[in-house]
Length: 161
Image (cartoon, rainbow, N blue to C red; front, side, top):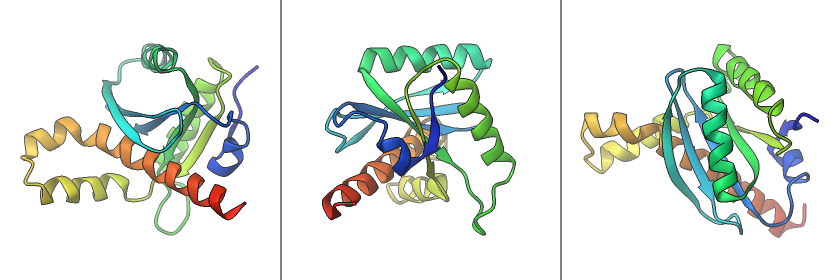
């Protein structure tokens, strides 16, 4: 049975109470990967996958999930500033549909507007060279996306929603 693809809050209802989540920043050339701790408090960068073919990319992602005992995915959905979905969001949804056919782990979509820009500003502020930024930006964007989702879920849990 294919995995459900849902907005983050709905996906959270499908995940067990504990267990790591994997966060993805999907780019055209790379996939930034981050994983949370089992209590879902902290996102940590894992790697940047150089995209090849979908099957190879998915195989690596599923291997990471198995290694880390992941219970669900958080995919950054690049929504435009006006709230519409452009080609990148459509590409992310297509990736999610393809991935859902290979796993039963629920997939949550999380608005990642400006995540890469925010990470780049942070890295520039830390005086990271342009070359080094290019190496780490996708993984850091995945951390930013996943941590934002974790923080949102924590806020909702604390408020009883």
